[in-house]
Length: 188
Image (cartoon, rainbow, N blue to C red; front, side):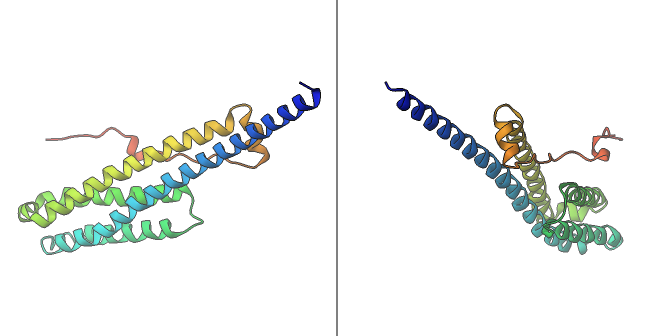
């Protein structure tokens, strides 16, 4: 084999390696974007369910209007932050956590209304919201897994050199808020 042919083969191999590395970075970045979109889909589902829940509960909860108002306000705030392309991940997390806390309060208050707890519509909506909350958590775990993979890829050698040159930046993880890290107290 001639030295020129060997040199051409090495150059072609390097070019193919660079193309593979670039394509891998783009693929990982798109997986993170897809995972973020999955979270948005589940949040939209949550936003769509809440008005139905509020309407179902309204008839039973004559004395608990404040909880319903807080739920409606938390939903509106979360939707506004979600629609804002300039909102940071931390702002989105805070709004969604406020909404989750309000939902928990609503379900706790519903314990005072036996007729409401027996309502098939309420039970179905409660199951739907519980299912949606589980799906949101799963989507967040999926997102964090993809963020981990992408961030690792742009930090390990030799991909990190290439990623830095092309200005690939790390994504933020979804993290629990400080108040969610506290121990849960169960009192009877």
